[in-house]
Amino acid sequence: MFTLFQTIAASLGYVSLSATIKNRIYTILATVGNFYLLYVSYRFFRNGFPLRGALFILAFLGIAYFCYLNIFYYFTNKTAKYDLSAKIAEALHIQVKDPLSDTQDQVNAGPGFVQTNGIFSDEEFLPATLEISAVQSGSIQAVAKALEKIDYFHANYGGLSDKQLFKQLQNGSQTEAPKLVEPVALPYFEMRQKGDKLAVYGGLNQMRALELATIKTIGLLPAKEAVKNFDVFLATTVLTAGPCKKAARQSLVELDRPYQIDVRIAYKKKGEPVPGLHQPTPAELAADREKTGSTKQTKKIAKQTQETETQTEHLHRRH
Image 1 (cartoon, rainbow, N blue to C red):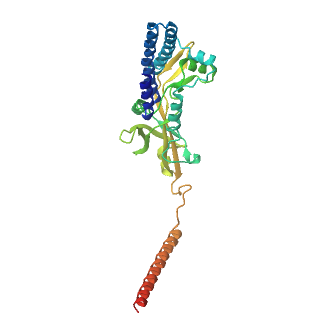
Image 2 (tube, helix red, strand yellow):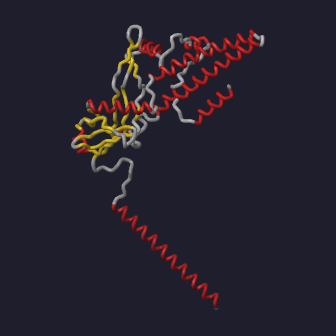
C-alpha cells in the first residue's frame, strides 16, 4: 500500500498543480494510508505481540493528529483548535516555513511590477492617477476572482496564521494585514482611447478584457492635455488592495475591502526620437544605398570576369 501511495505522490510531480491542491492530495493519501497502521497493529495484537501493536497505535495517533491539522489548514484555511505545531517546532528548534510561501513568492515575483509591456528605464515613467467608477470597480472584482480561481495568484495573508498575524499587528506599526501581500500584474492589459479619455482595460486575455479604470492625470497634467504633448504608453497594470484583517482586542476582524488597480505610464515627447534607439539620417541612408549599389556593381563585374576566364580556358583546351 505504501508503494502505491509513493507512486501516486511521485506522479504528482509530473502534473502542473498549485501547492494547495497538491498538499490537499497528500493529506488525503496520508489520512487513508494511516489506517493501514491500525490494521498492522491489530495483526500484531492478534499474533501475540502486544508491545509492537501498541507502538503502531501510537504511530497511528501521532500521524492522525498531524492529518487533523492539515485538513483544517488546507481545506478550511483555518487553524485547528489544538494546534501544537508551533510549540513542537520551538522545542525541536525547527524554523517553520509556510509550505505555500515559495509558491507565493514565485507568483508575485513573476507577474508583479516586473511584468510590463516591454522594458523601460525609471526616467521614462510619469506618475498617473485613476478614476474608478462603480461599474469599473465591479469589473476589477470580477477579474480578481477569475484570476484567483485559476490559481494565477494566492491571496492568503502571506501564509501566516491568525495567531501570527495578530502578533505581527500588535508588535509592528502596521494596523492592517492585507490578504494580497504583493501587487500582482494582470496577464493582459492595454490602454484605449475613448473620445477624449484614456481607459485602462485588462483581464485574463484580450478576448475577456474589461474596462477597469479611466486615467485622470498623467504627471501634473490632465490626461487629455498630456497626450497632446507626449506619446504615452501603458507599461504595467497591477492588482492591489483587497480584503484585509485588523487587530481587535483579542482577535482579528476581517474587512471585505475591494481590490484596486495601479498603473505605470511610460512617455516620450512628441517628435523626439526614441531614447537609446539610433534612427539613420537621410545622408546615412543615401550613403548606405550608394554602398549597396557599389557592392552589387563589384559583384557583377567579378561574375562577368569569371565567365570570360572560363570561356577562354575552354577555347585553349580545344586547340
